[in-house]
View (cartoon, helix red, strand yellow):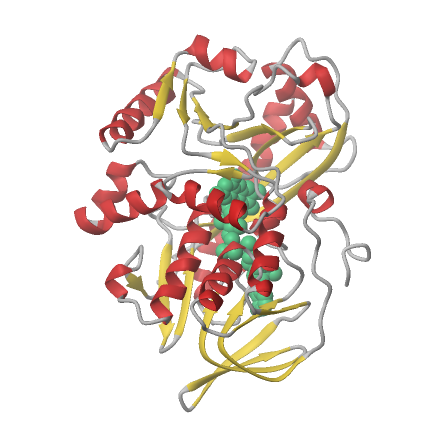
Length: 426
Ligand SMILES: Cc1cc2nc3c(=O)[nH]c(=O)nc-3n(C[C@H](O)[C@H](O)[C@H](O)COP(=O)(O)OP(=O)(O)OC[C@H]3O[C@@H](n4cnc5c(N)ncnc54)[C@H](O)[C@@H]3O)c2cc1C
């Protein structure tokens, strides 16, 4: 299905300047070095970097490029993980933890470098992101994070409530942590741009092509799809929160939560004071919310949970109520789009790189931070398959462990987040 024939899945799907890919022919009897399942940041970064190392790649995407989290997210190109650096080191050990923190600390610059190198049209801004304190305790947490990042030499500023208000255009926050390494993008623009760059490097990309089975045939993998069969030496699954039953049990290693966003119509001069320097923001609340503008002056606000209701529905009421709370002088706004996506949460909030079998790998479990890790882990897959050492991977290789109560937790979170929307929409 071409973009004009399928439902639009996010604002980014509509506004990205990079073109969607048209479906190609089937995958009958394709022979390749590396079959990649999933056309998001992970799959396409793997394809781009592997092709550059002379590994022939074939990407299989069930729907279209960016159908998963990559085409639906907030677009905050952040450094590091959700966890502060000291927690990453505590969980992974000093050597691996410090190396991961360093690699992901430099990751926004790497992503911006790729955007520059391949001239990816994705509304990139490089004026940082703000983690905003929703409470005094949130501010204390940010102060600890700031201290740790500064100790590591990272360019971060702890902002007072007044400084935060000046940058955000709202007095709702107790302070903020401005990370100068970070930036924002139109994520669909970025993922389509990665696809264009990977294809230019020689990768084959088949959209509308679902991998339905994986089996070993001698020293090769056979990937059965709805449109034929691919034989490959290696397989990388880049399916993250959209993982299906292709590899039994894989999706039981994490819980799914949803995150929704609502975009206003362009606000013009009225909105010029909001995040005037172009930063994106998220807060320290347990049920966190996100806020940013796009290149056309739309305000985009989001939080945990699904879109509930249509034009006059709960999620738009939640958005209107919160925009009024943050910007009481703004006046009424019209909404243009609302959408949600799935996030894969692991129990310790760390991502994984699993080796599922000989020659079969998956970076997975990004906990809602996947633009930089997806790009970097894709590069790491390419390095490993071109002869790199396992010890040099950003994470130690692991095997999936089923999470007790995972599916039940999805329902618990869904219910709790809908209730939260309802409470905060009143
Ligand atoms: C609403 C939301 C907001 C977020 N905000 C941010 C943010 O601001 N910053 C940030 O860094 N991260 C953010 N994230 C997280 C980030 O978007 C994800 O971690 C990232 O997109 C994961 O990329 P991926 O390539 O691994 O997987 P995805 O982009 O999810 O791609 C997986 C793909 O696999 C395909 N697939 C699945 N099964 C098969 C199969 N059997 N055969 C073929 N194809 C298959 C799917 O169709 C899908 O396209 C957010 C996520 C969401 C949902």
